[in-house]
Length: 266
Image (tube, rainbow, N blue to C red):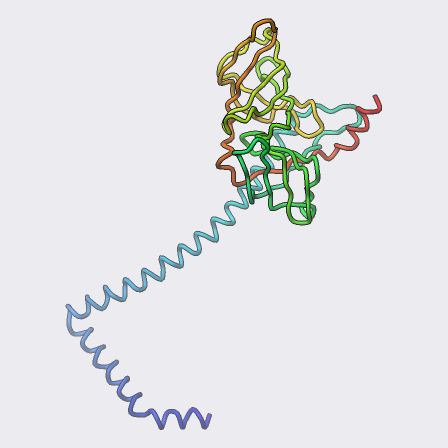
């Protein structure tokens, strides 16, 4: 307290000066319209600037929460859709599939063998042979995991094949990438009796432990029937743009081991 009093005594002149300046400015701004309007305008600009920055920060924080809410909603809707389309086998029950949200750290599309790195790993429940999807289609399959990260073999990898189906006819075939365009893949083994048309929707066939039935893939972009064969050579345009993916879902089949054991025992 003594120090504070000493400070006031030493700076009495400055304090009185500031006090008088404040009174003078108050009188000027209160009695003169022009000065008052200039002051209010200037003060208003500063205040509005602070308010604007505050609103931007608040909106950003709310956007983060909104994105989290949308992710939760997407997970719920996708899981409902996936499990409603899944056909149980004997002791395998409904609600086998669950989704784990993940962000993409790196994603190559220009090589023959492309891979994806995710910011979700063992700690999040990700396991080898889990699928990777978005609401627009199949992206790949997990092949390695660590505590916090995982890598997946991209659909744009010449060594991966996916069981796929023509949605309108239920004809099955093999889907693979020919390495030519990150927007298109090939579908083979579809018999000419399927009566393929451009624009037909292609989805996952469900004939695997990894992906359930009816996950979107793309549409028929072009097709032909090579000579001396009874099967189509089909080009599929993917729904998902692999060059712009930022977020994905890891899809887990919680009955993977049981289903695999069941099929192998048969």
